[in-house]
Amino acid sequence: MEDRILQVVRVAMSRRSLLRGSMGAAAGLAVFGSIAFNEGQSLAVDLPDDAAILNFALTLEHLEDRAYRDAIASGKLTGPALAAAQAYGAQESFHVQLLTPAIAGMGKTPVSEQANYNFPAFTDGATVISFLRSLEEVGVGAYTGAARYIKDKGILAIAGGIVQVEARHAASLRILDGKAPVPGPLDAVFTPDQTLAKAGPILGS
Image 1: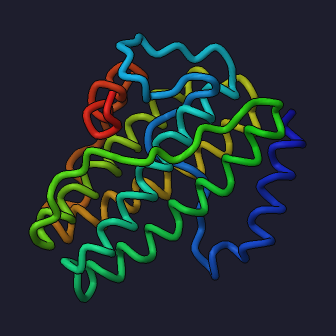
Image 2: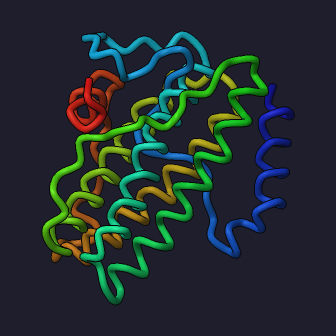
C-alpha cells in the first residue's frame, strides 16, 4: 500500500514539475471515501479506512480549490493578495490531482467537486482574504485531527506534507488579514465531526 501511494505522488509531482516549483500534496478538511457531504444528511463522521480518510480530505481540497478560483475570478484581489491566491490556488489544485488517482488506485471512487458551494459574497478584498484564511485554518485542524485514524505510514507521510503547506498558507493569509502569522504555540485540532460542523454550511450539508 505504501509503495503504491508513494508511486502516485512521484508520478504526479514529476508530471506537474511540482507546479513549477510549488510544493503541494493535499488539504482542507481531513478525509472521506464513500462518505459525501451532499444530500443534506446529518451524520457523525465515520472514517473506517484510509480510503475514506483520503476522500474526506479530497472533499476539502475541492472546496479550497474552488474557493481560490472563485476568489481570483471575483476581481477583488490585487497585488500581493492576488499573487498569494494564485499561488495557493494552484497548490490546492495539485492536492486535488494528487488525491484523486491515489483514491482510485485503492479501488475506491474519488468524490467530485460540488456544482455549488455556499461561499459568502466577495464584496471586497478584505472579505475574500478573511474567508480564505478561515478555510485554510479549518484545513490545518482537520488534517491534524484526522492523522490519528490513518493506518498506512505512506499516507500519513503525505498528509504530514500537506498539512505543512496548508499551515504556511494560513500563516501568510493571516498576515494579509492583519493578524499575527503564528497566534500561539499549538494549533487547533479538529475531530472529523468538528470539521464537518465548520465546513458543512459551506458545503451545503
